[in-house]
Image (spheres, rainbow, N blue to C red):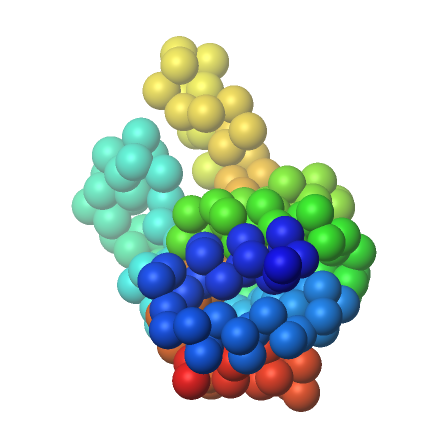
Length: 230
């Protein structure tokens, strides 16, 4: 009889596969199966960090570009009508630049989270939805990432005069329930949006790995996913 973990992996990742294919996967050890999953997740996290932690990683990507919160759109419109469009654009550009500079801080924490995955963690990721690994990263790293991101973001946004105006407007909006309390400062808002963008890109990588696992890098990942793909 096959080990429960290998059997679970077979069912969850492969569905009703041919018996010969199931036998190839069954020949893998739990250690190899877990190691292969860790390599694949490390790859996905690395690609996500590289894609965002560079010039225009946020600003040039509509899916993650950071805009002003919806409740401050009227303020943006008013400022532009008063000839302050360049100042508003500078604020928005630097919010995205701050996120781009902060994201590389995530690399070590994400890699550490992957290395610390237990066999039980791997089972839960395999048995979860298409973003189960991303949710694992969120749970394990959000608090630490916030602490790492905030100083980097503050260093960039602190140089902007309009950032103070954002904080004043956001503080009033939050007091009237028009804005989330955690978005009442530009530093907190950019940090949250940077994390949202990072996890969105990790989720995209996770979907690609699940849909086309043969492209996973790393010896163990190739060994595991080659067995899955035959």
